[in-house]
Length: 350
Image 1 (cartoon, one colour):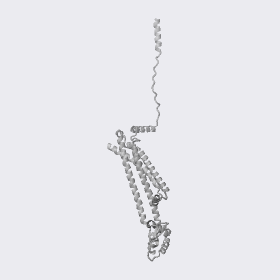
Image 2: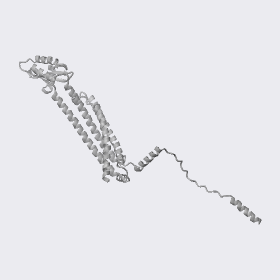
Image 3: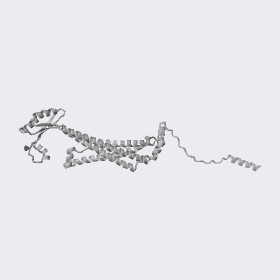
Image 4: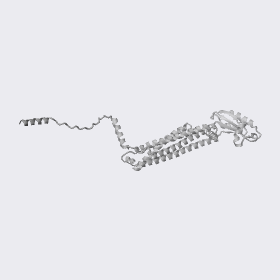
């Protein structure tokens, strides 16, 4: 009985001792951070865009076609900028010519038998000086007249034996004050064999030439920009064909056409900027080199001929502003053209 009581006591003591529990390591959860309603809305919008935006760019940023198109855009931009510079040079030269012609007229006195030429010259000079708006009146000397005729008749001319007209050069201070028709009428009536040349024929021809150059320049720019647009269209179609699966999946899962078009527009906008800036910088470099060469080559035959026609061959400020405008136009055209091409392609898919 005593043993049984001891066994009972041992069992009771063992029952009171609890077995150790097995420890299980559980991952700790991060504390929940309270977000503001605006932050939650931004996160939700970013999540929606992330669902639609692919992990990789739709259009590869660097590809052989992209580099080739960048070179094409750069060449087109260079040609367009050169056209703008040439139009600017010709327009400035024509404007300078017109200003010179407007402020100068000439009285021509043809030799007549039995008439004293010197007396008629003095009479014409005195009559012209009486009109308002005239700055100076000067009769060309025999030496100056010979110098004008030497390129055609050679050296050693004797004006006494030739019926050479004499010229009187009139410089106009204010063309608005001068009554040119009245001057012409009085010179013709008073001076024997005299006539007034106001260079109106040359002025009209210069205006027509300058207008033709401007129209031709714009036509060349339209052709260059049209060629560039066609190149961008073909490049966009090639990019669409190379990423046809990705574009089709994005289109059928619900991505809007504007989203896909923006991806292409972003790519071609950067491409157009690179090509346009490269072409514009090359054109500006050519302008500066041409200006430097014409200045340093003064005294040479070719440089003197250019200076005689166009003055100092240098592009003015409007020409450089036109270069920046061409670069901006090239970038915008490439982006818009690619976007329209993508939307047209997606419309056919529907």
